[in-house]
Image (cartoon, rainbow, N blue to C red):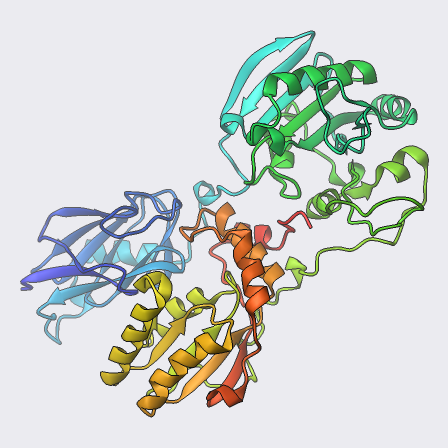
Length: 534
């Protein structure tokens, strides 16, 4: 019989957690586990330890699946764990191991388990279909509140004000959607300023606009306006003033329409992210399915270069074109749609194309590079914030027995250097997880290793700053517990960066491809969309 049973965090984020004999323990997000990931429920799995049988029974409680010995469990599934068997509270994350003290005798094997429990375990260890409850990126439980309407317009607040929706009295759901940006597409300022000076500073962009919209309505299209309005979030524009303005615009256009105002400063709703379209499909189109092939989007943020037309400035962003690409619908600029101009080829898409990321690419270049070493070494990671350094350190090197030395963990460079020295003196290998953009910074760590005769390999992350920004936004959207990286940090890294060189004392320099690991198909779908506005 065991004297104790523990749940051990494989990444050593916190001390072992005691599992009392024949008592229930909930494991999930909270101070005890230091897990902040919102997808992990506070009561993710329920555990019972049986000291006499050296078995822990597990029941899946949370809505998102856990992984038990490599098999997915959905809510309600029950199984058993033996000594040193593992559970991941989320697929690929927060891995824990069951530890009995003392260890079970060698003849204590799974055939001696209770027959009923063994049958249950066999059942849940077959491949299981992912339950719909795990889907939260695109299948959203919308919080919609009706607001006071006026002049025949209905107003609704969605997700506590991230979105405001205005629907005119005779607007109805349709399978064909004609969607438009507002500023610079339907209207422009009367004053000629970039931003309107007041609620009255607007005019219809082209005389052709009202007639074109009416023709679309007669052809069976639903007219939808989708506009990013960050000014509301930061207090530059009052919501009541905005409501008055767009109602006047709708009256001037004199066509049934629906308007989506993305008032938040980020999140899934701000274009080019497709949260607004998902809201339209799920709750704002009278349960009528949208025909993507017959629908289109028109906007002026098209990534056009300076002088794309004589006297025209370059577009401020590419968010409208990228929004259409994410939706896989046809795209038009206002000049093309309302004035009949030919599409210009003078535009740029972002340098980073998320669809180009190859999940089957080799992790290291050259391919012959050994990932770990049987002899003591230091691996110095170099790369911009968000390029995958911590993921590499925590998922590959820490489980392999390397000590992770990181300023984020230690609180400062001097403490990290001390951790490096102590680990090397103890005969351990170390992976140093910081940006290390400057030669002088790298040299401090190389010198510590050289004094002890330990070789240092430099692993240079290939992810560009643009991809790192994409990764940063992606982590925010999926609710990761990573701290958001502020834009000045990207600029600072670029300004200081010096390419690593073997003359700095490295035994080798290898490049690390960003090879993403997704927990489910939804995350991969989101990652492969354009998330940045330019």
